[in-house]
Structure formats: C-alpha cells, structure tokens
Length: 322
Image 1: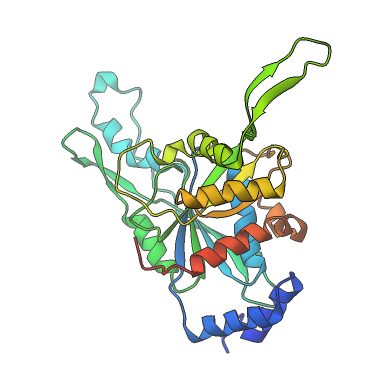
Image 2: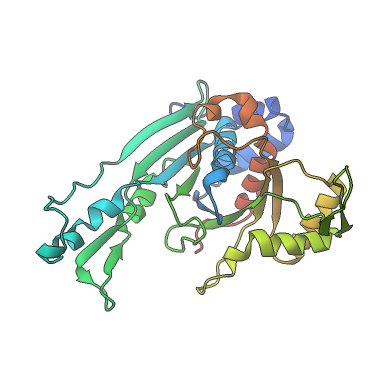
C-alpha cells in the first residue's frame, strides 16, 4: 500500500470518530477504492466573497480532516500588473508616467495548510497565475486577448494527486468558470433575514418595530431576489448549479421548521439546499482564508454538517461534465 494512504477500514474509523456510522462509512470507502472517481473541480459562486472566506475555509478544512486530499487552487493577485505591462509600453511617450521594465511573472507557490499525521487527509494551497493577456494579439475592440492555459495546466497537473480541487479567484466570484470547473455551488450571504415585511418604527419609548410576517415561501423568494440576483443579472450560457449554501451574519429569527420550508421552496426553484451556516461575528481578516483556524478541530466541527452535505451532492454527480 502506498505511503500515506489508508485502507477502507481506517477511513471508516476516522469517520466514526466524527459522529458518522462506521458501517456506512466503510461501505462508501470500499466503493471509492473499487471505483476510482475523477476529482471534482469546484467553483463557488458568490456576489460578495469577502465575508465568505471563513465558510470556504471551514468546508475545505472539514473535508481534509475527514481524510480527503484537498487542493485550494488560488489565483495570484498580481497577474494584471504583469500581463498589462506590454500595453503600458505601447502608449505614446507623452502618456507614460515613467519608463518601466516589464514585470516578471510571479512564481507559483505551494504550502500545506494542514496534514493528517496518520492518514491521507491534507489541505494544500497552490497559488499561481490563471491567465495571461497578450497585448500584441489584441481583439477587435482593442483589448488584449486572454490566455487561460496556466489555469488549465494547473488543474490537469493536480487531478491525479487530489480528491477535490477548489478554485479560489482573487475577484469575479459571481462569474462561473465553464472552462475548468466541473461543479458550481452558490454561496448566499444574508445580512438581515427576511422574516417580516413592511417593518415600521412605532412612536413611543420602546421604539418597537412591527411587520407583516412572511411565509417560508415568501422569505425564499425575497432571498433569491436579494442575495442571488447576480446569478441572473448577466447574459451568458446556462450553468448548472449543484446547490446553495447560506451564511447568515446574524442570529436567525426563525426556527428549524421555518428554514425547512425555505429549503423546500429553494429546491422547487432549482436551487438544491445544502445547509445553513451562522457567522458569529465579522471576520478579522477580510477576503482572507482563516489559515490558523483551519487547523483547529473546534473551528472545523461547526462546518462539518455543511461539508458532508456538499460532499454527498458532489459524489452524486460525475466530474466529467461542463
């Protein structure tokens, strides 16, 4: 048996320590060993990703802690400065601020965020350029053409080494990646949960607010319009969404039965519900993965239910589709 690989029984025992049933985990592990699957390349879709990095970090860390090999394929931040240097050089001299040499492209970096001491589970971050823009081959409108071969090569080189690959762009979280991703999961961020309509502050010392209560179906419709409008606000080819995960930035004012009704209406609308996550407070580091917390079992535990539901949803779909 290759080093750092575990048998089906070892994987099942690790799953049982986290509350799963040993027999079910053993059956899944044996099936996985008997029929190797092409790993999914997962792309999260979100309108504003800054406050969702903890959610992404918690999900991927939970997968790694449960024995999966997870790669976070992150886009390098400074590709634009390098790829647009040729455009700046082509400007007339009177429009140049200063003469500069073309910047060198950033070298890819690899770091292990967490690794199991007794099993295959690992969480690795690989940062590289995703695309190159060629000013010399401008399009009809004068913009440089985009070459995404660096991302394609990075994904191809990781398929045999990981169980799941998660794409982490520096920007543009709202746009699907049809070239490389095999699965798209929506992340919806809720600042104020819509459980009532027409809230009005009444005069008086209490400053009470009253509103007409919304049904779960009405609440689901408001959430789709308020938090998921970016999915339908731009033209493009249709994209299959493999589910939606909600993060609330405050305490939910409704109970589990109400949320179940919201989930049913989301499912009816073609948005498979994959769980709810509660952000206890605003993250200290905006738009950054909580690297230190992703090693802590207590932090990982709160994201385990959502991670397991998402893992089940991905397992039910083949990874060789666009």
